Image (tube, rainbow, N blue to C red; front, side, top):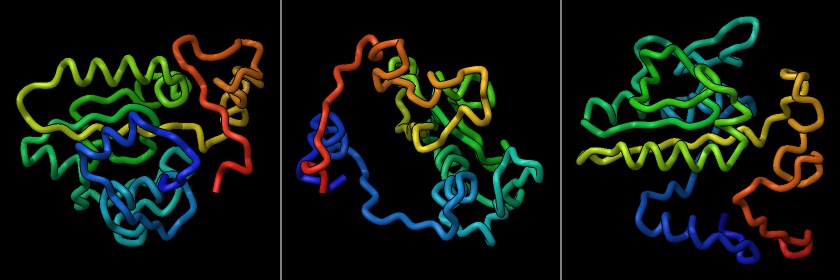
Length: 182
């Protein structure tokens, strides 16, 4: 993002036709509180997502919180989420179209870019005349072998060619050397 050494022509084209958020901050370096802050515009002490949603304490946002998908839905904007959701309750974060860890394997909807692409296509093809908001939340910043050991090393190296599975079938990787990245 704003790195002159990295080429993202498709994302750049999308950004020219979209709303781009230039500043985003969170007061917690943890998944669920960060996601809740992004989707509510409120820090965790105001939205109630004090810790991980699916951890031992099962943190949820307060029922009175009005999230982005809720407000957009009330404004007749069709909403979708693909990938990692990790916030709740459902009444606070309602999406019209949802493929997340709640109903799919997060490794498929959050890491497998071939599957993500197919789901994005399904969302766009099912679109009606309303404006839309699609939230694609990649799982890549997370480790997953610790929570899903049945996937082993494949999970940790998904898509980078080191898993023994090779490259993702319809993905042409763009390789960068560290000195190219600012």
